[in-house]
Length: 88
Image (cartoon, rainbow, N blue to C red; front, top):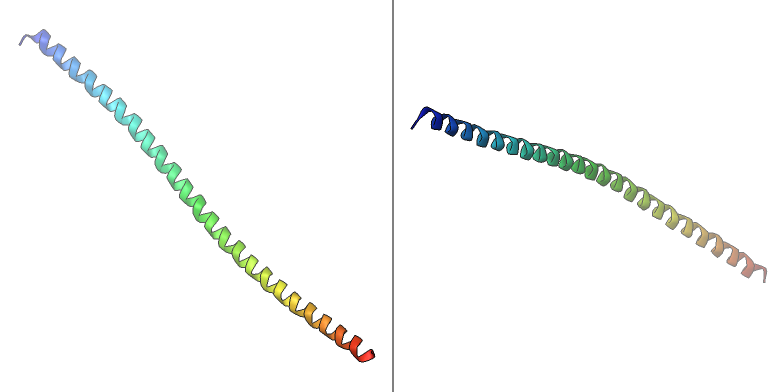
């Protein structure tokens, strides 16, 4: 093999390696970007799940308050009815 053909072979290999490195950089950038996006999505989902637990607890409290108000109103109505019946 002549020196010129060896140099051509070396340059060809260098060009192939340069292309491979460029492709790996693109893939690494894409993977890194995907990992960041996944991490952000998981953080957001975790925060939303926590918020939902708080909202559910508040809704349970409100339902309990409404049941207590209904019970109180029923008692007031019962007393009013009893008072009207005793006047008759």
